[in-house]
Length: 408
Image: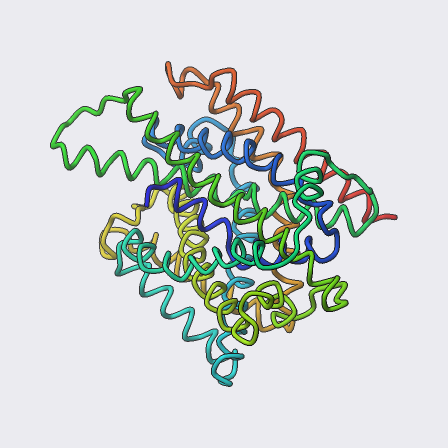
């Protein structure tokens, strides 16, 4: 469970799953092409962030603080924290809603229990061990792959839709495409992977008992391989969820996903009455896997902004402010769920919010990755710059299109 694998797995959180299903229901096969574009863009950006953290032994926020003016640092951290808190609340609300459906116990009570469990587990358990347990629940995502072979799929049409982009430019299409890009190319993953690669480096150095740390082509090769595996895992799951969700419209006449029960119908052809149960396990597993990553990203950002001790490899007493930031982000996320927004709406619009702040962050990451003073000989190569520039252009175009449609 390297940083790249964990990043890829946490990207398919409840927000991602519900966005994929909604896209499959509303847009059908016409949204499959997005996966072909997000895979290389995600890999390019996450490899860049991971390499920055590994080479500099610093998180992105610390680098922003050292090399950029405060008027750039503080707005980026503030906006990112707000959007990530909304994502935390949306994911915990989804977990609590499915637990309510399974147990008939009020979701309000489950919100509190889920929040306490996540806070205590993040503080007192090594995250990799926690992820090692939760990955078994996350494996329920493989049922979406199995469903594809249990229903009639026009594979030729599916592949054609994957390699042949379909563009509509209507309001519904723009919102869902923005949500798809926002939930896959997510800012919190940038911060998370840079910090986790830095912690990996520190752990390796402690285990080897060496004062100096040498960055080798071999170690960077492992980083790239781990990141590629994580991004492939994330995008393959995304492709299959969109694919099998297209039958919800044709089989049940549903044109919009309104409830989690509607969303679980994607698994019904394979699991029948057990679809809601397995779907619920997937939401619980991916939610509990993703929320510590989301909250941890906030912990890193806040701690590095104020020069506090930080790191999931530290004990609570060694980094109290860091862990309190994590706990507070979970509490605030839960508080936001009490305003009465339905989980489906909250999850999808969380993905849209990410799309709005991503272009600026990509531009800054590109600037850091190409700065020889920061990165030395490990600065971006041609492929990283091509993928980064393409990601910047695509996300900027989506953001502009989304803002334009608001005034239609």
